Length: 200
Ligand SMILES: Cc1cc2nc3c(=O)[nH]c(=O)nc-3n(C[C@H](O)[C@H](O)[C@H](O)COP(=O)(O)O)c2cc1C
Image 1 (cartoon, protein in one colour):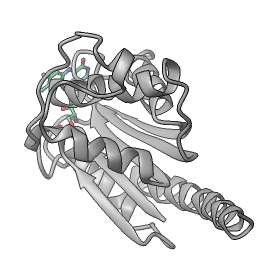
Image 2: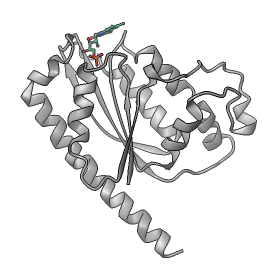
Image 3: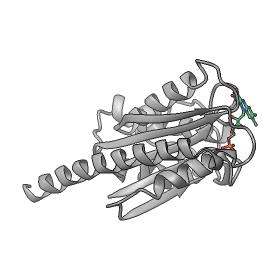
Image 4: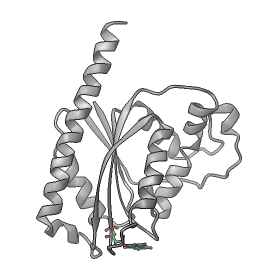
């Protein structure tokens, strides 16, 4: 059971980093965790050329090819990122836009991908009711592009300073509880996949 964890903040040791770290510490049954940090990867912006609609391939060669394979082959994805102007930080948005070639493989070329489950962690400084609407919608459609079911989220308002969320025991307890549920739901997905491969 392989997990891909995406740290969407450009700030290391920040709030998203703390949330992801807390979540991953509950990962029982997981054989491998690959952590991707878009801000530290070589990722060009999507050019919107639409070439992938016919080929399923991106014309740009950079760190995304490897990342896309990991996303397609894994059992679960955890994305942790802050809100920047009611959306995601630019480096993460570039990463997400570049999954368009996988979206094309699914919707134009009718390819199916192994089932997987995803979870979103997000944090923002303010307290508005709609603070996480944008990132939640983007994540739903990002996950869907590679056959990943959006199974849940945890959102935290009012945290701005670096790593400040580490002092909120209630927040971390919520993350741990949701992580345990997430990893046990992955276990059943992985067992179902094993059963299927034994029967073929
Ligand atoms: C460029 C930028 C834009 C931001 N936009 C918002 C915003 O729209 N709403 C909000 O509540 N916080 C906003 N914030 C604050 C961050 O969401 C907040 O500091 C968060 O805790 C950062 O998480 P991190 O430590 O994982 O980077 C913004 C911060 C930056 C640097």
